[in-house]
Amino acid sequence: MPNTPRMKWPFPRENLDPWFDSYVDQLSAQDASGYAHREDRNEFLGAGGTFTFDDVGDSLTWDATLEIYSPITGFRIDVPADTISIEDGQVFYVELTRAPTNVITAVPVVSSTIPGNDTAMVIAVRRGSNMVFRHGVSLPSGVPSPLFAPAVPPAGPLGTIWAGGRESHDSDVTPLIVGAFAFTPTIYLPDLTSLVFRAVAANGDVGLTNSVILFNVTDSETVATLDFTSTSIAKDEVTLTLGSGVGEIDTPEHIYEVRIILGAPPAPSDTIELYSTELRVL
Image (cartoon, rainbow, N blue to C red; front, top):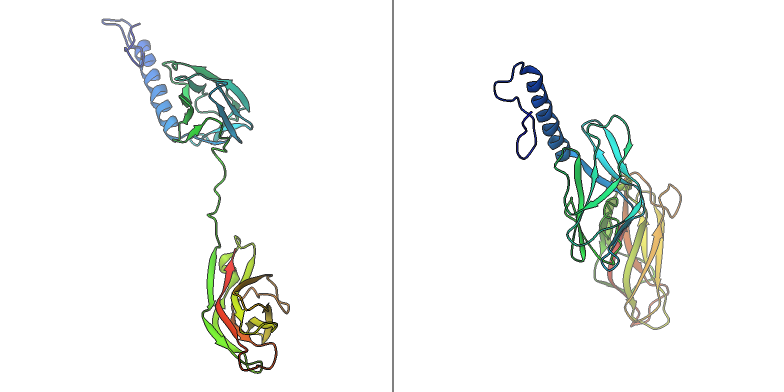
């Protein structure tokens, strides 16, 4: 039976009689190749732990099972943790079981070329001192990396609530309200891990202790107090907790004020110099 030159699909010989069985073979080969193309287009890689490439030792290592997901049938093809030897220009591929009906295992293969069949799928190719993976990541030699790690939230807080700016105050009797805000922790859940009340301030007199206060207006109670004793600009902060007790941040929406106040009756030069306050949601 003749075959097409590239895909090697069989087709009926001219004037073949009977021809139907050969025609079925041709359609089956086309169906298998078409399905392989569809499956490859939808398969994706995951896990694998940390990948390490050594261009001097010509080795690629992954320390956990590399997983190939096949969404069409909903099963997985596993490539167990391994170390393979791979030279410049060679490819790392696996022979897939098409349309898997359970979780199966594949064996890593290294070669200069891949077979012209419907089961081979390239995982990576070595280009000099880099391994280039099928999802576009280039792994340099000597730089271990989890190529398929879970997504990591960007560094920094989930939110920063401005709570007061530049102010100067000279009384120990009446605090100065420098800012107020409504805060509802539930809008940050479940990602919220901690709350930090932070202030930057300085004293106008050596030895005096002045304070920046976070006050719960809704419940008429103090949540946190930051004390400043230096005439130099200083930062202080305190980690807050969620809860309904005194000194805690309530989960429902509450109104909060930030206040500054002297710690003792003022002399002519006694002040607290506030530069900034904020609530950081982490």
